[in-house]
Length: 371
Image 1 (cartoon, helix red, strand yellow):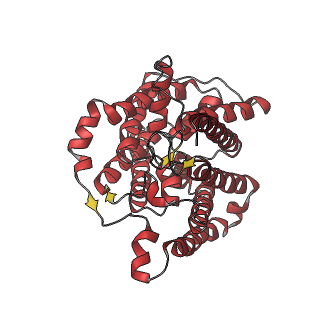
Image 2 (image 1 turned 90 degrees about the vertical axis):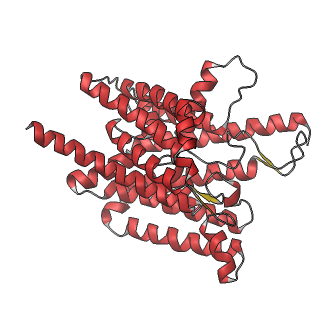
Image 3 (image 1 turned 135 degrees about the vertical axis):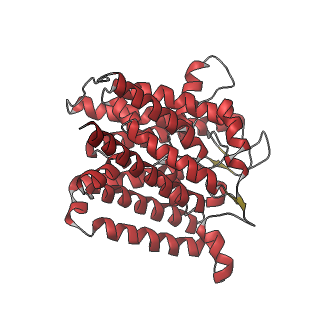
């Protein structure tokens, strides 16, 4: 493959990722898809409807990804999530920080982008602070602390940590076949639970759950199939085009926001290139804005007071640091990572939810105390 072909392929990958992300933004704006909101609905009013939407999305993404594994299109071990190192402490601490922070900041990374598209200026501030905190944790001052503490504690396995890779030798079956069985079994169970009650079968829930899950699976295809090069002519090695990690990627909204800020600030630097993560962040904003304008729901919104500002600044910082430590957010780990059946992703997801519940309880305690 010649260089001109690689450039053309990169353009195709980026446009495909942008289009799918714009669809994500429009669907999320239409259906109010929000992990923080789903947890808050349960804690505050006992409403499980949005949680069923989120679980439906996980099930769809999981079945879609593992069907592609069964077809031989993708391999979980070539993603960021299924390497041999189970960074359980980073997932626990980072996930809890992210979960707590997203409550203070009125939403996770994806919700921040969706709200920017709807005219929310508070989320624009969260975007900038989250990106700075995330970049510092990737390569700056907090990165030094992360590497020296959390990342140094890990369980190193003999092979990839995704469940099909772990269980295939013991079961004596091919990894691809086991991935399909596990994907359908676990993902199917999630679908059954999500659709078991009428609230989970509402039109918005179906659109949000199936639509978002399908978009996540679609981006896996874009990165792992369309953007896969068996032998890069420049390096003579396998490559995944237009990814920051140099591995197969799907949607995630912490590190990509940091890379988006970096690209904007150093636009004239020829070494800075657009990636799936960067165009995905832009795509979500564009899709959300397009829907908001089309339905006349676009509204400017700012901070209420200094306390509201401080809460969002603290929350954004916690999300930026925690999301990098945990290798993802409610989308990066909660949908993309979990769809690979990675052990670390399940740990991070549980910790994110626990952190969100703790923050919601803390807010309720503050309200009761003030009263």
